[in-house]
Figure: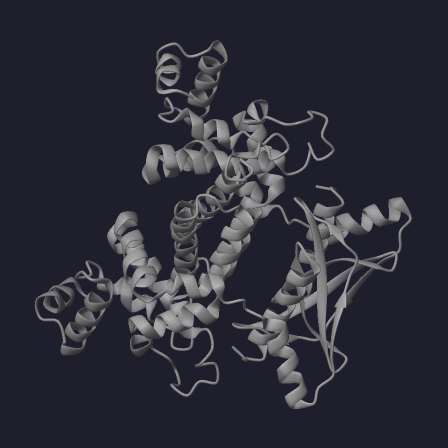
Length: 244
Length: 244
């Protein structure tokens, strides 16, 4: 695009652009400085075009960045909120917050889903991770556009405070094992948890469990107890089978 | 400790405290504001005492925080340094940087190892993850003591720029598979990579491989190709067997 065209577009944005700006502003609570970042954040790889340098332009790089930022902000939030809990608790609660199922719901709540550009709106994976990923990409865009302090505030205010029921997340005993067993009974599948010898990891003794459905191993989980490892294996299976 | 005692100690710090302050200042490049954070960061759980509230005081919570900060700073660094690489590349290079083996070496280089308080200096796990963990805890302490911008500068200047050979990290094809096979031949062990059906993860097809040594499964790895999954399984095995 020529500089003249860019300047023209800056002075007279299209209606679509004005609407998009308004949508983003209502989500992040301030006018975006660099709208292109937010356009990129809502660009799913199914519509991403190849750039001149042979690089497919989509929100995946921003998602990588946003994921790291979200993890850090939530880590600090939990660290300060729970001064007498150990790192095992903090790790567990954070993983419940940043897991795809939670992020997908949050993406719906803050309204990013409407903005995501997809090849095919009836995409098979629609209910899957696309929107959670877009939320992470949005966080990446907010960080690059507005800096660390604003982005942290955005996460804590617009995501954690407005939409996250922390007490529920902590007290829901996410029993994925019973969920998968229930599913298997309904679907008439044979299900088996196979546990392995205690393995000595870096920090503590680690258990490993495989989940086998109809003779096919579909997931493995690790944990500091056999129960924990089973839950992790079951969680992964639930995610793969889209039971969450 | 009474307020009077605290005040006294503030005015006349012990020799040990003055030395510790000097050591920390030489590592982070500025005088620490809150020395207690750094004391905590160098306190391994083997010497951590139970607090009044039944909470074992050690550097593990700070490690949780520092790990998240390090991940984020490295993510942004790579995101900006490699504008034409996809998120798979960024994820892979970051994981090579933040893995225990690299962090342990970095901890040695920046001199935190001398400061770590351990129960037993000949601790079996000494060569293991203790120092990498202490480095992460130090990062957490720097963040809480001096804020985000300083901490980011500390990581980028004192760790990445001074001690990390990024080109080597990128171009070293970390062939853990050949490393573990070599070890097995030397130790006369039977070794087998067992691969499982392609499993459909959230984003892409995922492969899973188990590494079996003398009929015992010692690790599993996942990856977007069978080769990658094998490497990850071999890497985990190398870590468990302390071959790195």
